[in-house]
Length: 149
Length: 149
Length: 149
Length: 149
Image (cartoon, rainbow over all chains, first blue to last red; front, side):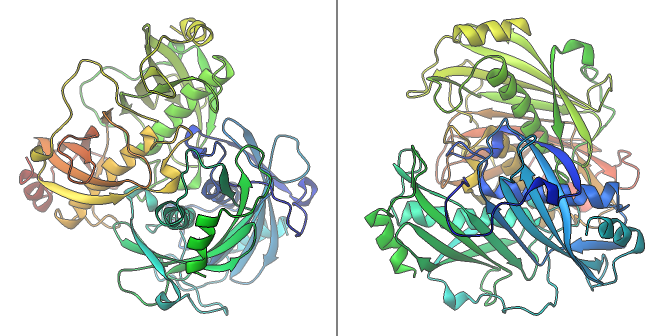
């Protein structure tokens, strides 16, 4: 379980900061023994928002693309819990766009809510699928990411 | 998928830094389409190491305890990928022990390996189960955490 | 991975057989190493359709209800694979409504499709939360289930 | 949640029926809101036992094998619940070995227990990875499966 606690830190991300949104449906087994969505599952939501954008807008072909994104680091802050059967709106923005890597922020919102219930940072380093050596971000993908930067 | 990338940062956590270990078995569905354990699943491993210590050593009774831990923030760094059917050894240490909260580091190692393949930080704020108001860490639990600090 | 194979058996369930539908969004980590939704995850979809109906229509209060459903048996047939980022429409019907138990069929469809890509059977025995002894299905819930029988 | 209910049916599978065993560790998030391992997760255990045998004994190379197993049907019976942090011993046997398909039974046991807490049936049809057309089971794999039949 994850949840809201008053500790001093940057306020929750706000809806207006994000340029791309998808709907996410929660699942029965997302809830843990404490009755709310387990903290782990938020990362599955985050992963899903990012890859959906890479696929739908960035043209990523996950089964055959010669360049794929791998992850050196992720983090998430939890402000207010979701619980199945809640619906979630996941927002995406690009906070850093490098030559071979990008860092995204994903905000997870209740329907229509202004403040994120959770916000996470996620970095992708783009590598050759075969060798896992870092390579330049492919042009179509880069253009798509630039639109959210 | 997560994986090793050479970017400048603190080196991977080392086995000698951790005082408690459990075995974790990977599962077929941990692997994602890129053939390695999905980054999300590492958080399930981390969660499992921490709660196992709270239960086995700290005396946490997850179904009835009046005080439970909730999570304001987690993060993980990925150094080298696991893939099913790998076995994992998860190590735990306490990096900060406050009056009402604790921050753990978990290192995930291949069998016998010295450098963590991934290391994560995870904070628990202890709250009253009924109200979710922060409360002092119960004494038995606190003593158990102090042993790993 | 699961998938379509020509073996002799009852044809896939059809959309017209189901009286209640919800949308389900797939997640990046639903896909396994073979590039399609792992067979295990279909059961998470099935679970989600059933419990959503019990909560939204049947009035089940999952955190406090004195009577809960436990599962003696489930099964699923896979006809044609889903893959993230597919959208899924999950349909529910009640195939047997007993005094203390019910068996559901769930059909999982692509948007607008007539034939289920997967269909599963799932039995709930209703028990007292405290003792796990079978009890009569509560009246509100029973009325909701009767509507889909 | 899944659980034990007295309905008339074949008794639980017994340990002596299985010729191959692996250890499985449960995870915090395996438990659902009712405090026991969610029924869905048992299928992840089953999947893991089968594929482990195919890989370790049958020589399956999941990333490159030209022939892979896909699943037309699975089922599971739940006799007595597991809960994190339980340890599980998963047993495997082959109940039917055809030219192009095999059906396994997996029994999930508590450490040293004689009666399975859950037992599942799982069919693999072996297909060409590229076309998904059924093909003969490769000889090495077939020999491995025959040993458990």
